[in-house]
Length: 206
Image (cartoon, rainbow, N blue to C red):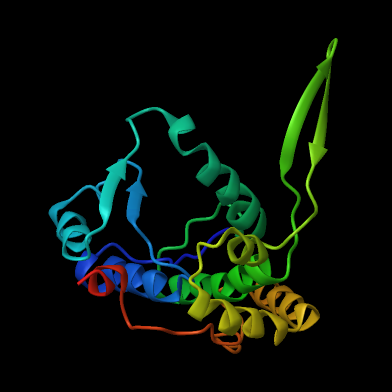
C-alpha cells in the first residue's frame, strides 16, 4: 500500500497512540514492524512499550542519513507536500482538516490511482532506458502479492469496486480549496473492511 497515515498533536497518550491504533486497524494485512526517524515523538518509552505489547519490531534510521528513508521521503513529497504544501499545521482544527484530507487521499491513492513500477534498467552510453510493468493500484499489487490473507481478499476487492474515483477526486478538490478554515465536509470516505479494533497479528499467533 502507498500510504495510510494520521496527523497527530504532540501528546503521545492522546494522539500518537490513537493514530497508530487507527493505522494498524485500517491496514489490509498484518503489520510486523514500525520504522521511524529519530524524532523525539517516536524515540521514547511510550512507542517502545506500544511495539512490544503488539509483538512489533521497532527500528529507526541512522541520524543524518535521509537516504535511509528514501522511499518514505519520496511518498511524502508526492502524497503530502505536493498536496497540502509546506505550511505548519499544528492547531486542533488544522489537524482535523489534515486527517480529513488524508482519509480521502489515501483511499484515492491506494484503490483508484494505478502506478507503474520500473522493472528493468539498461544503459546505452549516457542514456538509461527504463522498462515499466503494467500500471496497477497499490491495493491490486497487495492482493496479487499474496500478503493479504485469503479470507480478506474478497472484502477488499469488493470495497475497491464500490468506490467512485471521480467522486473521491471531487471531494479532495473541495477539501483543498476550502482549506483548514473552510466549511465542514464529510470526514470519512467509504469505510474500509474492519477486522479488529487493534493489531491482530499478536493475537492470531497465540
